[in-house]
Length: 84
Image 1 (tube, rainbow, N blue to C red):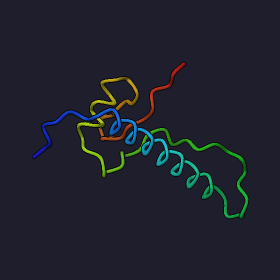
Image 2: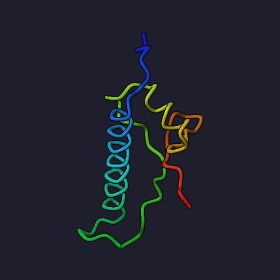
Image 3: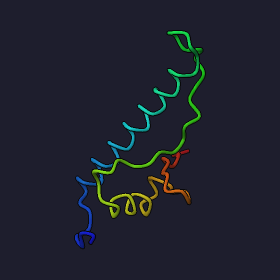
Image 4: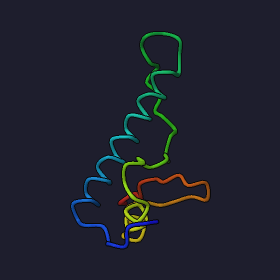
């Protein structure tokens, strides 16, 4: 059963920070696997969405979507909304 208390600002901030860090690490991991050589070709990663870190409640991710910071697709992946 989910926790009925709304997420705090600190929880939202920590979750968003953890999301950005996991996305960055996922992109770096993909970039390092693009070639068999120890150095990469400099090609950017095409990863735009990831599953959010599971140490945070679903209500936190829902609130970040509601605030317009993240966008969710039909498969449960989230991506950062561009600020352009």
